[in-house]
Image 1 (cartoon, helix red, strand yellow):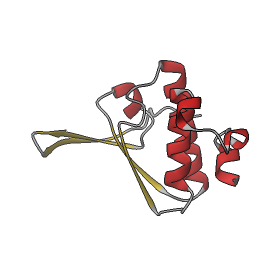
Image 2: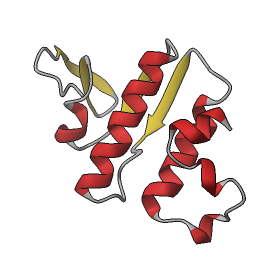
Image 3: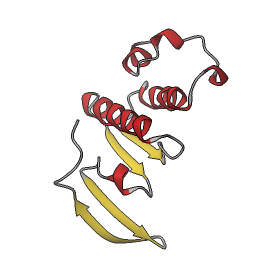
Image 4: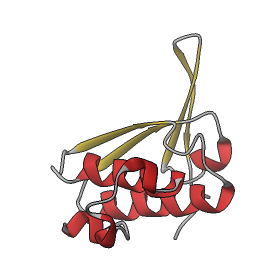
Length: 109
């Protein structure tokens, strides 16, 4: 319940996925991933089907919660605006690391 409250869905505890928006469904997925407090959270294109506003909300939520819970977030994306939230960006091509960038200009909430 605490994690659902944190993602803004405490009142949706008994809702079915079809009763929620795409952004709400993403936040439920985030809550499920974080509730057991794993040391590393892997997210593969977590914002791929979301609009710009919801993408920003989801990324801010993921970064703040993993920071607050002392977790590492490994995020896979093709969207450089999403990658801008990261401390470090690792570029991969054909299965090989081609560049590692320490992102000093990252998006900060």
